[in-house]
Image (cartoon, rainbow, N blue to C red; front, side):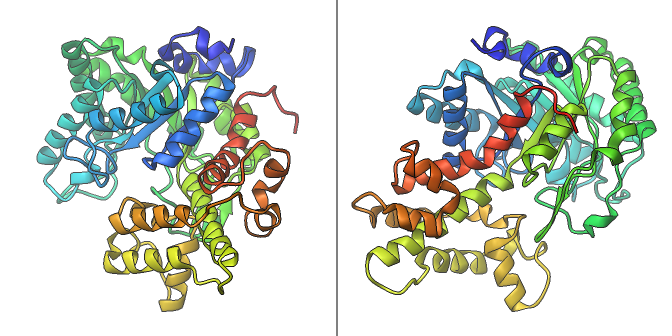
Length: 437
């Protein structure tokens, strides 16, 4: 039986630092997505591997006011647990996390108003049983600088942690584990030159830990310090619309060594999407035990859906029309809020990015009613197994799994398999022996 299954969920996270050195698994993938097929694929992976999974929701995606998904923390948990029930995955082996919890969704408001809303959000997350809480209060609110000093950030984080402690006591749930630190890539991908990425300085990471510990103590939540399990830092890993900055261990050697001065803690790496297996393995080797992934999974799903769209046309003896892509283009053009500020260039360049960017802003549009109907109609176009030769042509990453009988050549199964292929490097990186480089 897996080591993770033998422990409770809290220990699975709290002992990642020990596991990194002495046992398996040495890390964990943190999946940030609200797409039902992504959630199902992750749960199926956990079921096959007999391991718990970590699923996180971000402050913009899910909050007490609904977020852009329309879900509160409690309804998001219900959504995930319903899918778990459908595949036979034990809900007790799901670790729920809240990411970037702070005033970001309301930063246009004055600080006090924004923080009051952040407090309500954090309380809702904890009361719903979210155990891993990343506190992020680094952003300035109305009338403040874009980035705040460390002491202000830490004081505000401690304020939210105090709310979390009280919420856990009121709800009778396990007190949360905390992630602190704010040196993270921009959500959804970088907008700057990837060659200009700066790895977090070791002194900055140590300062982050020190000021947060002091702020927690000052706020009267000393025991919560013991439940700080990780720090978010920048190891030199990012992606933008068209490229990926692959992890280079030599650039993060000093940062990794700083963990020796942080007993019991690990680093959390954000935007690890699209990293090759060897890079993810090197990250885990170097103490980045929590690997955040999200857009890379919906990117893989979009690839599969667009491939199936063409296959459906081929099988119906018509020229490829890209019906699904046409629908998605219309949906995105009618509501440009999720992509317009992220995709530069002229009309032609923006059209390419809307559908094929690594940032995968299209993921915000799959819940649209027209998009859901288009996907359902696409699946309904297949009344028999898809020929292996067409899988090879348009879904080549899945061909070997189809010909060996591991995946049935049917649309839904192929979509799930595409997501699982994108997850495979994380499993290899977190549950294998230390890698030599």
